Image (cartoon, rainbow over all chains, first blue to last red; front, top):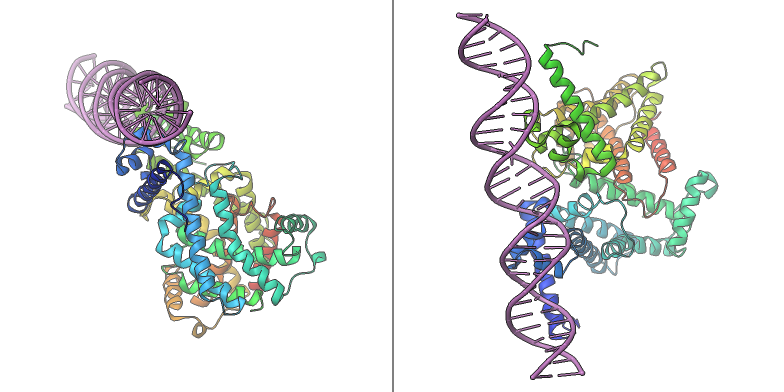
Length: 233
Length: 233
DNA sequence: AGACTGGCTTAGAGGCGATAAGGAACCATA
DNA sequence: TATGGTTCCTTATCGCCTCTAAGCCAGTCT
């Protein structure tokens, strides 16, 4: 809560940054991602044009900062769902977090779509950016729960020998990247679940399933049942 | 092959349209989707600016036409894979078509990403557009094969009574939309498979899995094994 | 008091989508 | 063959965009 630290100038600057983010978000929600321009945001904040360059290096930087905000908010929503069921078994917490993820996506469709539809265009994303760190925080909510599940109630995993070699190598690398908290086989199960879950949400938000479904809630619940099956919940 | 029909003017117009599409595509591939602007395309074609408005009503129309091209090319690639295995059992044809889909996506990443990353932003897409029809053609390749599989070698489907009511209603509507060629239960299996397959490809192309995988080929093959399992191939 | 810094302004270059107005080639028909 | 309509293309222009440059002004530091 020591949010008001720093000199007067720093406090003012933080307030302005906050205002910029709010303006950008309202433009996104009300008029779509194309409306989030430097000029429009500045206009909404009350300063004119180039002043925004004192806060962000350019349009891309602003977009990245706002995206990081969204990732943090989504991660927070998921963490809240997790902590609201702190006493429940890990499996229930995982399901609650998944539902919270979709709930946030449904209540904030513009923001959720923005997260990967808007900035995906850019090819090489530097790994030290705010956006990247925020994305990692988001990803780690479910990863951490899966680690806990793995430690307390291990789920069935494929024999590493049954996996094709190229896949095994990638899984070993990923396992090392998360400090070995999941062995390659368990990492494979986790990534499969993640891919199905996130992929389904991705397609829902990008309206790739509108040709068949008008409400994906039961589809999502069925997906969760599949995951519960795989994770032996 | 009667591609040269029509008056001289019509032929010239078709040639120019072709040239416009090629220019737009090369801009997309070489410089990214943001580079596909009316002015840049016109410049590349050799005419200047507003001349393009004699061919397309605006930027959106051009984007839509190019997208339709991509859908047609992808659908053609899948149909070729299907017809190359015309003698094989349906199951093998389905797998061949899925692999052809990913192969096209891998050899044309910019185009495949463009298909749903670029034009998804637009909210209401009129259902009679070229783009929409081309997308339908693409979707129908696998749908038709699934229908054939269902007729010749029906796969296990859930009891309709086991499905939640809201899902059942949507499936009934979708089944009617495809002229009942698949009953709701079979449609559900088909849509599940489609969602997993297309969702995986979507995430691969949008680089949502780069944090874990560098080469998704074995992951895709495992997904295909799952589908073969579900479809009882 | 003076110098520095940060926050802001306007001016402007260059590119974008889109419209308007007009010239030139083509084509059909009286 | 002359005339008029259609088609293709041009330049000019508007308003918006990103981003840079130059400069003003008020707090802040020494």
